[in-house]
Structures are given as structure tokens and as C-alpha cells.
Image (cartoon, rainbow, N blue to C red; front, side, top):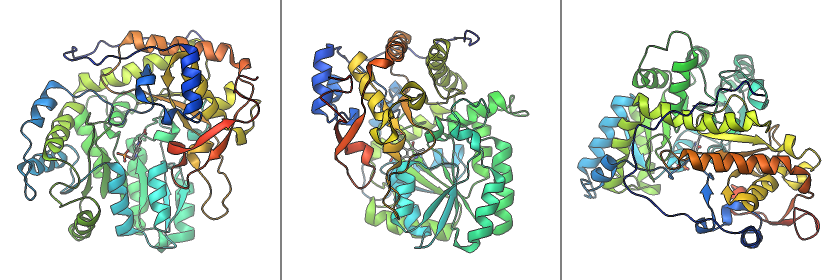
Length: 469
Ligand code: F0G
């Protein structure tokens, strides 16, 4: 497996402010993970050396973003900062109506409440836990219509986020009028940050357009998606990231944005809509759940930082370095024979836990077990993306076991250096080489009803430790 070019694009920034982190001993970490119920999410961040739990809200803001914070207008109503944000979203994403929300799931709540009725059916290119949870809470059934390759970690398909048009047509054929919208994500997080192609977006638009079904876009990592379109899709190589982003959004009727991803902000989000009547309904719900429609749960300063972050996110040098860093880590692992999802995604490297720990039963959560082992080995925190994250079927109450059981290492933007990534790679390679030491998985001692991966607690399925004994 030495055919992977391991390149590392130099960063288009230098470091102005630093935050100390500390390495701990292995016995310390064993104690810490036990106290955290074998759930890395419940660790204190001070006990983590390299935190790859998420790329959400964990990004380093630029000096321009920090400066923009000082210009925030904190007026309750009609704050100037809202109009700054509105202009940025209109310019770069193209949605006429912009409603700020505190973060992505705030927007998911409002859009789901506006459009879903009990008995609704929502097709989408794979689920995201918070998105699907809001859909289901409002009475909808989610249908995964992503192409089969998205569920195959070893497939090198360049656009694993594409919709399988036959699957979508079948869902439309069966549920027709009960489909309030199609839910499209770019990139697809649960597939490992895999993009959707422009051609596929156009084809989905054409198909849904014939049936009068709108498309709601999850734009959290749409800039990363635009980068892949530019690299991989014929006809787009000469276009700017900003042009591609706008073209992608043009196929959709609205979007929910978590600004904690592409836009480098620590908090924030927005809903973007084209339909004025729907926007009016969303604004009135935002008032109840988020805040007045000109701040939506964000401080004025946060809206300034998001607006500035949007502009920075579409700079070509920025997105090249961002995705290049993720690919560097992925290719180092591939070169060492660690089974990771291919191609390497835009925001994360995902380890195939079923391939690393083939003997652990799914009921013992191999992904969660491997995530715990990585922490014990190197103080590195990743997150399970498999059976634990998938939760239980709301109708049968049974555990859902998606085809892939992954440990996601999400890379925050502009935060870690190449030396950090090398430490991560070395740690993962060591755990992989010594995988036979992981003898048992985990079982619940506390299982929350929603988004259980965040707060669940476990004990080793047998004995005192996942390492046996
Ligand atoms: N959609 C996608 C694709 C996401 O990845 C997330 C969050 C959300 C919506 C919800 O946004 O967190 O601002 O409420 N993803 C984070 C992650 C939590 O770690 O992948 P939010």
C-alpha cells in the first residue's frame, strides 16, 4: 500500500496565539476513561492531548474574525450585525431569506416543525443523527437514498454522497405527497465527509422538480464539497470555490447551516430560504425557540465572526490547506495498512472498526471500543460513528446497526500542526498493529433516549477492561 502520495500543503496562515495542551500517562488515561464510562465524549478536555472529537466549533478563528467580534452590534432588534450576516449568506450561498439560529440543530428543529407532519417521509443522502432526530420527533420516517458505495468503506467512488436516483424515484413513487422535502447533505458526514457531485445535484433537482418536492440542503460543509467538485468533476476545475458553492446551492430551495464547520466560528448557524411565506413561518418559530429573527440565539459579535468566516472559507488557499491536511493523515494511515474509509473525506479520517476488530460482536460496540482504545494509547479523542450513533428504531425499539461502524477522527480547522497529525497517525498505527490486545467490547450502564452517543455510559462487556483482565 505504498501508492499513496503523502503530501502536506503548507498553511496559508501563521500562528499568533497558542493554547497549551498536555500529555498524560497511560495509567492516568485508563483511569480517566473508566471514570468517563468508557465514553470519550464524557472526558474532560484537559485530559485529551489531541482532540479530534469534532471539527464543529473547535476551529481557530482568524485575527480578522476576532477583530470582527469587537464590532458586534448587540441591539436586541435590528442589529447591524444581522445585516452583515444576511449580506454574506446572500452573497456566497444565494438564499434571499436568512434567519440566524444558535447552531445547526436549532435550524433543523425549526425547518422540521415548519414542514413535517406525522406520517411524512423524508428521503436523504444518508442520515445525520441530529437531523434525523428532529425529523423523527416531528413524526417523519427517514429513507436513506444514498448510493450503495457510500456504505462501502473500500469503494473509491469519487462522489459517495451522490443520491441513487432509482432509490429516490422508488420512495417518491411510494409516498409521493407525503414527502415534504428531500434532505441533501454536502458533504455527507456519516459516510466520512464524502461529497455529492454537481451532476447528481442537478439530476435530483430535475427529478424532484417534476413532483414539486423541494430540496433542503445541509450546508455545514458545502465549501469542502465545492473543493471536491473542483478537483474531481469535469467542467468545474476552472471555476472558483465561491462560484461552485453558489451553483450547488442554486439547486436547492433552502438550507440549514451549522456555521461551526466551514465558517470557522465557535458557535452559530442560519436557515436560508427562497420562499417568502415559508420564511415568515420559520421566523415566527425562531422567535419561540431561538430568539428574535435578527439574532436567533447568536450574539451580535457571533454574527460578525460568522460573516467574516464565510468570506475566508471560500478562499482557495484556505480550503486547499484544510482538505490537504485531512488527506495527509488519511494517506499516512492507508500507507500503513490501517483500514480507513476511502477516498479520504473533507473533514475527517474514519477508521473501519469492523475491519480492525472483526471478532467483537456489534452489540459490544466495536467503534466505541476502538475510540476508547485510541484514547488510552495516545490521549487522542475520536468519536464513534456506527451502531451507537445510529440509536434505536423509533418503532421497534431495536438497535440500528448501520453497514459501517467507524471511529471518526475529525480535524478542527487551523488548529493542529503536521507534528500533531504525525503523532495521531503513529498512535492509530500502533493500536492497529496491537489490535489483538483489545479483547472485549462495551455494554451500556446508562442509555439516553436521544443522541445517545453523547451521554451514554458503559462498562467492559466482561471483566474490568477492554484489554482483557
Ligand atoms: N448537519 C451536519 C452534517 C453536521 O455534521 C452537524 C453537526 C449538524 C448538522 C448539526 O449542527 O452541531 O451546529 O447543531 N455535526 C457535529 C459533528 C456535531 O461532530 O459532526 P450543530
